[in-house]
Length: 215
Image 1 (cartoon, one colour):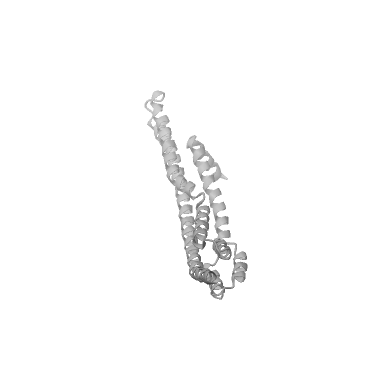
Image 2: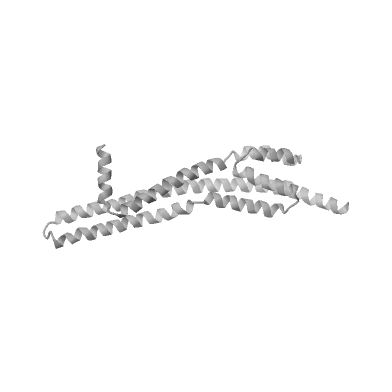
């Protein structure tokens, strides 16, 4: 309880900038929870999925491959499903899969730029709060000339804003790094599925078109 009261006291001593820094910390937490849930939904064991999908494509069991994709709600399942649908409709397989992959990657990157901005913004807000606090501290000369302890205490309180801003920035940096790493893994998984479908279906599609022209 005493610790909580001390934290509240330091928060108020940090000045009005502390409210903005606190808002940044809430944004980081909200984005962290939302992205964690979303990335969890979009993730699966890519190697296991590929091991199941590859033999189906080799035997051209498209219907079974589509069923596998429907039971895999992850991003690679959706990408593979779009490729299989494009193959059946005889659409441009490469263009459709590239578009689906680009859109999926954009959705995975969503909100991560806010974390990057907070990494830069929070320390600056902390420095701003400290500068404002120091200005107020040195104004003590106007009314309390000859009392250096008042100035020293005011500077110490002003540094609370800088410390808080740095803590929020560190938290945002850790979260951003974690999700960036997860993003790279999912993009790599999409590239593997893209390569698999293109190599297995594009050649067969070309052969099927040539046979149709001959007939």
